[in-house]
Length: 102
Image (tube, rainbow, N blue to C red; front, side, top):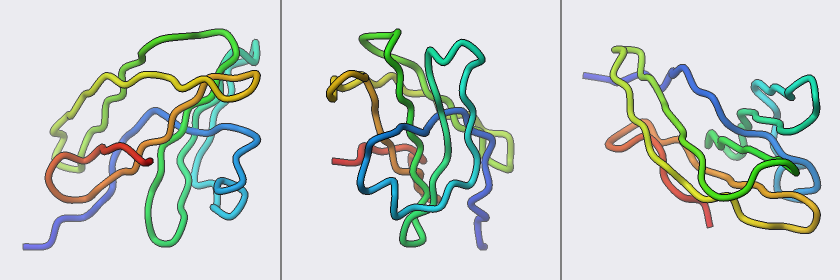
């Protein structure tokens, strides 16, 4: 049986990342106040989830829902990079769908 890798997600998009410049943006969102931005990037057939903020610190929760409506949630820490805090996660289609990108 083939599993499709289509999910409902919320995370992702930062600025000032050279790797992100080579990725295509699948979806993105910036809060109206500009406090944070999220998005979904596709880079070399891989889906990456990014979040960037100048307002928030510490950890955040990320939930991914599969086409079969199964939800996976994990907590991650924002990394301080220059003037912003951000994190990147790779979305996988098998097993646990979210993993760290180093």
